[in-house]
Image (cartoon, rainbow, N blue to C red; front, side, top):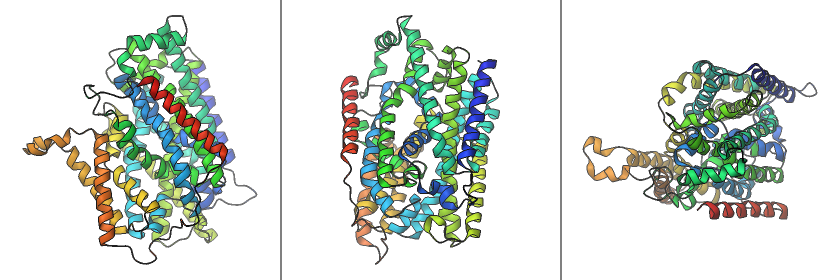
Length: 541
């Protein structure tokens, strides 16, 4: 496809501008050297707009733009439920989870697990999250990003893969979370405007000169099967999005785990200057999630009409970029790179945070300033270790992306299904830890192990080893599988907790003085999100 000279100038201006901005916000103020609280938690001073924008920038990356557009091409608007149901999930996280996390001065999710259950679960889950973040999430972000860059810019994909990863590393290496969060408002503005531009031009093309609204009407007429929000059992993609389970089933397990208990996401809210500021940022992100299907799903559906017969669904979004004239293509391409870089940088920073604070510092018994009481020498060492961990993580992702994802047809669905092996157990562990005082570490570990084992039993092709009686388990949609495994793991965790209760003093999480009431303004904003969701599903049911 290739980029014109004006496109290259626009992309270069973006890269230079965002890098300079990141370094500017990362500068040491008043001659004070960075400590771990500043590097990993932005000194717990983030305002609401930075939190909301950074939540979306961390979430919306190549696996969303390219992957969700590809899923829109393959199965239609139903994939938008991942965005719309996330908006409702964010309201729950802001109202019920954040008050407990911030009251107890939590800075990583493994730290919460130690204070709630004990040290073993902290180490176990820290190692798990590092593996998941590097070999599933980080690889998918830069792999799908490299597909788009290679198709649009006409460069070698391996070169694009390495370039994206290294730029994201260097961009945030100095400033940590502060560099990421305080530049994400620029990144989000670019990616939303870029995505809306692609959707508008694609619909205008379908409309044949009568405008984008006429194009949307024509798209619904020519591809009505792509506008079913709730798929019926006879739909070929029912196994990916199994009917009402999207609204009342397994998607809740995935969303609660991702938005509520995922270091990569929740770290922004943990770095807020106050609970009220964190909750305002969460509501801001919820409204942005309502808008996302226009940005990332609609271009893929439009490609059904404008580019039928693509070899792979994930080619849909890059193909739609061909509609853009020179200059505008550069701007939208810069928006795509912005999404990739922002999400990659966020993931790198979260990996560095968990490795440094939950493994390195914990097992060497080093206090960080996030925990109050570290020496300046220890602080310098922690920041250095964080930077080394960040560098190592992106190098590993660059080297393993092609072997892991090179043959995936729909990378977005691959990520959801693979993550589904672990999310039921994670959700059980945190929900019981937050709201049931008798939950024990033995119960938490049993839930984690059961989640993986039970999910594997459902996933495995038993017919291939001659055990036909178990083969029906393999046909259960993965979203239904997550719900079933969640309840089985929940039952097991409760039983084990009652049989092997926690020792005295094991639970150090305070909830007795936590208040869940929110302001009238936040309540009205949350009601607005709910009403919009009802209207959307009522329209496209």
